[in-house]
Length: 334
Image 1 (cartoon, rainbow, N blue to C red):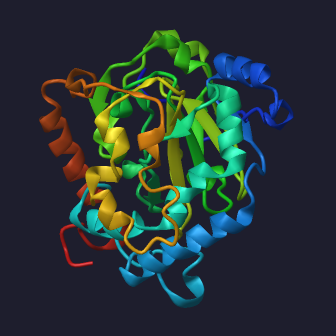
Image 2: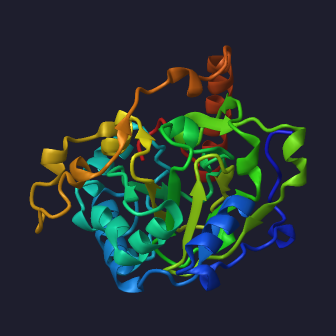
């Protein structure tokens, strides 16, 4: 058993909504320990999320990913899919990662209070702030079932916050959680074309777990620890990019690896990112946080022997699929 077919979304149960637990640290922790996730409706005000979306889509329109003008905020695509890590993706990332609003969002009081209730006083977000730009009609690139721990390492209490930057239905590629999967430890890895190029290999122990997913409204937030198996649903919309952000929080005094203190893909030095910011309050804030830096363990992130053959096969199949859908190969001018 590798990953589950979630094409029949009507059969997928919704998230448990945990708003009634807000302000009650013990019950929050108990529910997280039970389910491996917490989902909150309207946790954040919509205004800063809309502002961040407007800034991101302005960059994407200027770079030709999406249409500009009246269609900018709808993020209507204007190009073939760009893959995480390719040349154009990194060039775009070097612009989006400079946005002060991207880095200030995880420090909002609504999130900080919740995370400190959940993880204890002194809990803080990593400076690694990630934007997700998910094309429609590219299911091969959907984020596969995986755990965050191999990519981040450090403490297993590392907790992600996933936040869409618009209403995001399951059909538009919201996240799904394998409920209770955090209790089964670290899973083996296999190659995948999607973000991170890795998916978790599951076994019969997880057969008793079920996938859960809900439609998101702007302001909703999903939390899950680093051993919870999760995935993005396919963006089945005809023409709209799915935009979301995610952040990682950890308890005070816990372990982290050096990459968690760097920008996504280590694409720019912090000094360059901070140039032009209006405030220096959050610049290098983690230097005053309490944590233990530990070495990265490549063995936890390594793919099995023979994965290059699998990667080549998947690459060929993907290029063929894009040619059939768009009439162009990813290698042709866009």
